[in-house]
Amino acid sequence: MNGLGKTYLKKRVRATDYLVVAQLFLQDNFLLERELTPDDIKPRLLGHWGTCHGIDIAYANLKYYFGERRKDWVFILGPGHGFPALQANLFLDGELQKVDRNLQGTPYESLAYLCKNFSWPGGYPSHASPLTPGVICEGGELGYALGTAFGASLGHPEKTIAVLLGDGEFETATCLSSLNLIKLFNSRHHGSVLPILHLNGYKISGPTVPARKSERELLEEIRGFGYTPLLTDGTPSSFEYVLSIAEAYFAKIYNPHANLEIAYGLKENVCAKEPPFIIMKTEKGAGGPEYSKGKKIAGNYLAHQIPLKEAKTDVEELKELEAWLQSYRFAELFDAEKGFTL
Image (cartoon, rainbow, N blue to C red):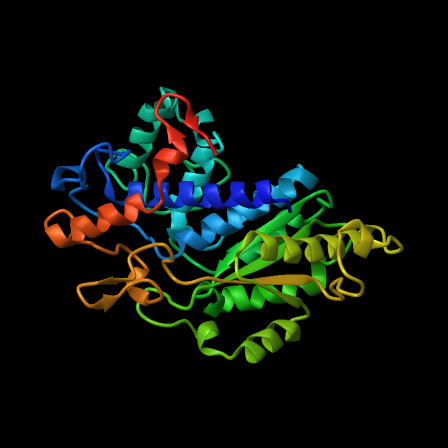
């Protein structure tokens, strides 16, 4: 990946992270053209922040990598409560505008409608829903994403299906039992299923079980199901490398005699011998407030839903929210008349 690609991905994640926070909090002043006031904050704050930064990272890297190589790739989101991140990416790519006439005005009008109407009566729900392009079920329950991915692969060898799993989701019996499906569907007759575990350490009320395990224990668990675990910290170079290993493995199923190390720019003997399983480790709520009123937010379960939940009535939290939004420098990435300028 060249420098331009890395720069684009960093800008894209900044833009979608900002859109997530704006959807969660703002009912006005969407470009921070003036000082934030209580009237700019929604009267009822409902949604989830903690998983969204990781979703934005995964979606950006997958789209950048597979968008250049395979037209027929699919993204399945396990933690559907991270809906503002999915919606932010679909909005940035212009996909949401194709199906929602309310988003077909000027770029600023579309941005304002998106943000104000997230988790709003008559607007968008707080969780993934069938109103959204590509979404087939409500996103409030966890565990079914991996099984859905394998089902979508049946009889479609042209498909690459990347499925993002939350580490809280990875505790569920449904998700864990679905890992066994690789023994049934790993052939050239079906699509390529690429599981990605988003290991951010916490669920709604405390640490997750996968996060409590040592790295060795977690890797051995995944190997025990018949996968090759691949680690990434979410940076563009790291993500590109693990995706190239995964793509080389899938390609070898269809062309077992090809020199895939050269084709995918890999070092010798790094191709996965078993189906790839990516572990993406990020901080819970990364990019958001580190602390508020003496409580640790980022890297803690308190980032799971709404940090700064008193921003409408508490001056200190309102200032913290304004600093959080300003940290993304969204004005460098979006023009009210031209739209995104990444």
